[in-house]
Image (tube, rainbow, N blue to C red):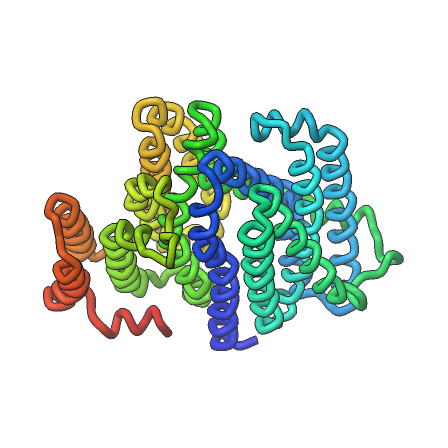
Length: 472
């Protein structure tokens, strides 16, 4: 596969990732207008648990599968996939059965409520999700991006359609949300299962092969767990320190702030293949791209902070984009979105640890971010509530970017355009503080939105050709 083809396919995979995440935004009007804050809090904990356990139940073997499968000969591919897949089947089945058997205890432990039926459904969702994710991974490994994105699109359509049916028309509340997820996961598992038909063989099962793959994959598990802690642990800490209503309110605002994650991850899907083709001694391209990306992220961050209050109050007949009881959640959006701006800064610094082959630093940085996030949540939530949780997330992502910066100073120093970067941050923050301290009309907000990029372009902070570099 050529470098050009790799870049193009990476962009397609990025589109698939964004599609899968986009459904959470589309469903916000449904959840916030129909579900109570307590119900939405339970849904938040359900998806937090699913996120954690999907990573754990792949236990790094998914990364090992991809690494060994791609360069292998056809006969060897069958052995690699068979050993990994049956490992996933056995471990996910054991865990799911355990959840079902202890559903009453698990329900109170996870949600603080008697929801054994929900736990049973979550157990089935986990089983299907762990396995159909491998089906889709094989499509990616075999350079079939159209099939990959088609699966993501099907996921979005099923999730959206079934939520509307179960939650809006049948009024099934929490049960409807989880049921729609279960049906979607089951159908995606069944629909993508044919990918395995000609690719696995029980005769190729080998304990030695499995051990070899596990040896490579296990180090990826801690890094994945740290990432999940960083992104998701605040919901459970909020529930422990406050109540389900607070979790629901927080999660509604967090979902809006996560728009910046789509921007960061969409960029990263093209960024990694771009820098991996560079020489370990070549750093010149990074400074220009960093400035251009931070300009774009700063602009999107400001737009989100400026227009969120108007967005959540948009009326659709008798409903608004956010149910009125969730409007207070918009106050955390700038901080959650800011966290993902710092995440973008972290992603921009990854060439150093990749090109210098120092992947252990990634686990260390993520671990420090996860530990700081837990500590800050326990410190700030009792004082500031949901704002404290948002601040904890923002500070933790900032610390990760700073940690990686100092690591790169030793192994991969980069001559950043500090003057331009500082101007971008000052402009974004200046416009933001002006917008929250002065009552602005719609026209004034529109003018501010347009003037932000114009001012920075006129100052020469970023150039059009640098922006085109990112697009290409």
